[in-house]
Image (cartoon, rainbow, N blue to C red; front, side):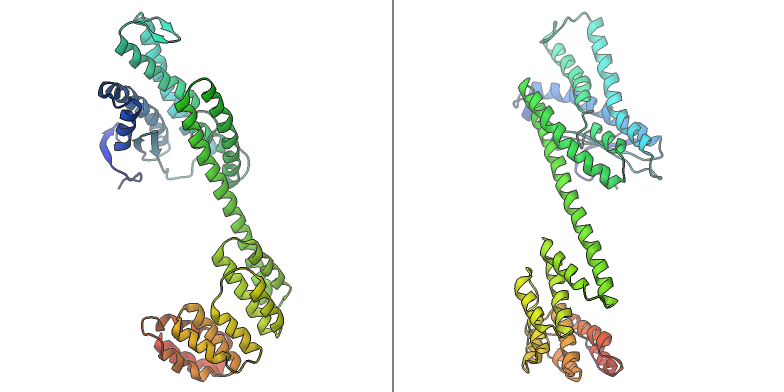
Length: 386
């Protein structure tokens, strides 16, 4: 099965699977102003030029034991390859350079052919037959001009991949810094191309710069999320060891994170712990002040710790009318706190059969963890309902 997906014309070249996507032909007609003859000329010149470029990558990747696949699409090409062993940085750079290198060879051959054919090279193109002049000019520009632009340090161009391998640090750090450099280079080079009249090149470089900016933002967000995850793990470990000062770290992370799910989970932990150690006023304050959505059962659990005689009934009602794993977990905690674990199997049995197994499993887990040996009979009854 192809690693590249998509659809189009498929064939093989030198043992490499090649697919030309339909977008390639659509873009050719678009940039030829829907003139069939111009579009055919564009396809005849551009298709082999891109293929030669990708074959350069493919042969280099094959030398490392990979089985590359090539896709040609509307804005260029892609060679997918996965070697049996992780390549060194130098090997990765070699694969990245092989594509433009193959294009440069083809471009020089076209340039030499034009010179030997007696065409006069001018700033406007070649003298002689218009169609051949246009084809040669286009071929030379694609293979030499675009090949040079492709070596700019901008992701996802080959120059961008080379830049990633040349930077210090672990892979993620290198990619983050490379994305930042890509944005700066894309802005500058895009403006230069625009000023000299290469509008399409400027737009394409601008698009690549936008992609690099997206990589930069997503990587930064992932780094922050992982850093927050490490803080939470450490704080939870301290909390399990009895260090109540960890509550402050969990609260700070709940206020900092923008992830709604993580925010609600951390808020729940902070409120539960504060209520369980008798700091019900602080728990009620955190319910109001920490951002994030939590189960209504959490409010009932705090009320139970405050001594509200109706709180356990509220927990049972919520579990039955709004059944969820969280409602079941908090119902179990409430049953243990109120000393009413014996009533839990009956409450769970009244829940809609479709939602009952999830709730029963969570109630059983809470009772099994916090109910001690006396709760084992209840756990067995709940497990039969799960």
